[in-house]
Image (cartoon, rainbow over all chains, first blue to last red; front, top):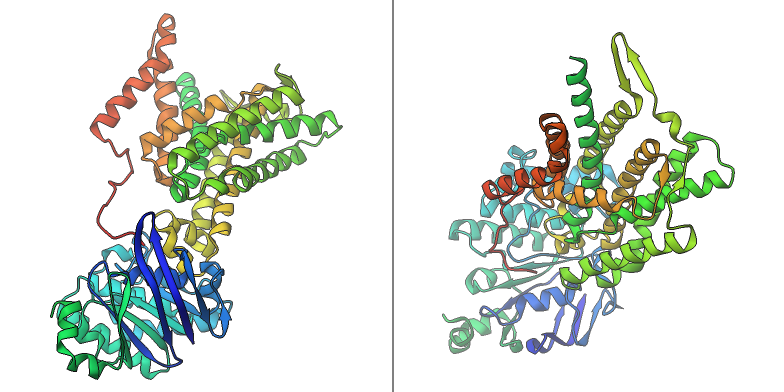
Length: 234
Length: 299
């Protein structure tokens, strides 16, 4: 479904991603693991087009989108939930969800989707007309993922959904991610929390210092304990 | 009583005009971080359009009002497309200098193509009459300024709270990249913000023309400085702050005119700024501004 070849991202003289290639098949949940500063977020931002890679090609759904604008990539069915959630704190919970559906022209379907997320996360319903900035971190993450799903994407890129959350909430978020996979959504999950990310992953990439270090099934990564320790620090 | 009422109306009318222009600055600043000092020239383009249309035989004041608003909105969108879009991702000082550049170029175009001297525009003079309510005589223009500004602000609030594009503008004021991740086109959000800002300037231009009855190349520049001050008082980037700051500025100015003895009237501006400085020492983020939060990683 998504194929990135030889991506390189630099910020001035600093190389964030070096010659990275990855592939995500339809219906797969792929985990992208690596320590802080490994280039994971830069990879995601290159895939959505928020940063322009200096080299490389990206194909999505069989089409080359390397030069497609972010807005049009989202309209094409690729979306991401950014690291740090980035909910619109000054807007209400409801307005956040409505903006997630900004590209859709079926008000009835939008309403149904909103109701579905409110049923899944009742706290979003309770706080529907309150500023989203008043939600707790975990609730904000639930809102952020729901907001991304409002556009009915084919592929969702999740950037560190566990960031700054209590272990119990992290488990809950990953339960939800597992459920999304079961419903047939294709996902790329970027994480530092390897244990959670590997629960549902079909395949794993490990990056460090901007380059790919491992590509294969999760079981093998868990076996090669040294590798896990080396790049994830335990 | 009559005098007090008249001064209150003065303050409200001045305040309403400052609010309109300040809101125009704030809408653009809130999403782009750009202080558009060429905003005054948008007022200028609007006023000169009415002047040219009248010279070509336009007589209907209603058409003139519509033309003023449309010309201003178009001018604002054109400035964005031609001058500000190429420097959108440049440092903020680049945008500021670009705005000054646009301002100077457009003012000089007015001088070269039309005239450096003020030109008479009488088509909107009919808006400026005296209305009599029993013992009170009030200026129709001031009443209209107040009512129209109020309705405009109400319409703006409804737009920003109800429409998807309005929500996107509010969201973009904090987090532009994430708005793009919703699939909302950045260019459209910015063009809309400029069009709104221009339309507000056009409404202000109508009132200026009706009051002064003439147009000159530097027509809007002084007003934009005042509006800038109103934004600073209210808290830069806050729309409610811009409206409140404009109103407060109107009240401070008229209040000082009333309070100061005739021979000290010249100190009005100086004292206005003293009051504002004192206010900012007490509240550096402005009346309704928010302290900048630092922490989250940029995406």
